[in-house]
Amino acid sequence: VARAEPAGQGGGLRGIDKVAHMGGYNIPSEMRGLYAAAAGGFAGSSVSFLLHPLDTLKTMSQADKSQSFVQLGVKAVRKNGVYHGLYAGARTAALGSFFSSALYFGTYEASKERLGRVLPPQWQGVCPSLAAVCGNAVSSLIFVPKEVLKQRCQVGELAVGDKALRLMTKIVRTEGVGAMYNGYFATLIRNAPGSMIKFGIFEQMKQAVQKTLDRPLKPEELLATGLTAGCISAIVTTPLDVVKTRIMLGRSASSSPFHVMYTIATEEGVRVLWSGLVPRLLWSATFFAIGISSYEIALNRVLEFNYGPGSAAHLAGTGKQEPTRVGGGESKGE
Image 1 (spheres, one colour):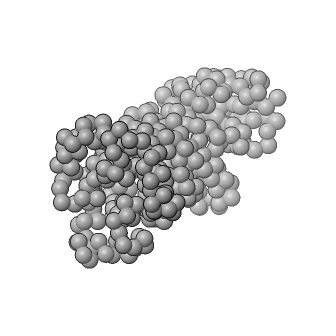
Image 2 (tube, one colour):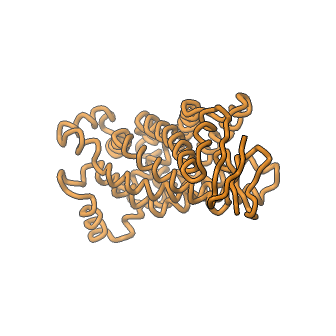
Image 3 (cartoon, helix red, strand yellow):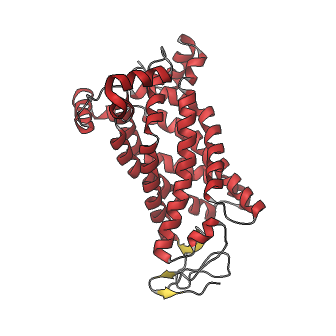
């Protein structure tokens, strides 16, 4: 009978050829992506809904540079109320985020595991960054249509009381199915370096702090680590985000990200490429910090649910590992 044992205590999965280290446990490697997808979907949808108003302000600011994001927010609330003004498209975004985040984290963890097996020791440090790019390429198939619909809602194309599904039908009917994928390559160009920076910095900082403290990180420490990585990434990639927004909203004559960026810089000024920096910094950095912390905690709960108690104590920093199960067989832990 296959049994899961806490990692780092000399045990493994007896009866299973390939194992992966995850959340303090050695688990069947084929389950790594599935567990990550479940935790990532929950974390992504929850954080997306929670921080939607900040994302709305960021989108408004990038679409209309004549006013500050505060003025645009006040105007939207006065016109449509708090919910329809700042939470337009929130449920659509949350639902889309569940599936895109599930795909992202499932692909990320599975790719990180496989890359770790094939890359030489000197290249192990880039595994998280490369895995993040793989996750983005797959999840963007769902993320981009969700983002197009969400941003159209945020700039007022969704009438009060109307359904996002009706707006999507209108877009497809009048602009074609391809309109739902406007900005796909711009999204990849923005997300690839952003994810490489965020996950590369996060994983390196996480490992360094864990090594220094000689214990797993607590939730608040995960939050601080994620916030640092998110801030750096948000500042560097804001010009790419501005380009993506312009293309998705159909406010650019070209669909080439580099041509759009050049046009903005030459005709409107380089500063315009950092439009919406403050709300994006607040949203993106906070989203990543809360999102990655929620993911780690949710992943811990998924592992605890499947293998029994022990992971929660592990995350909290006690270092305690208790007996766990896979397929009904017990393993003895100290």
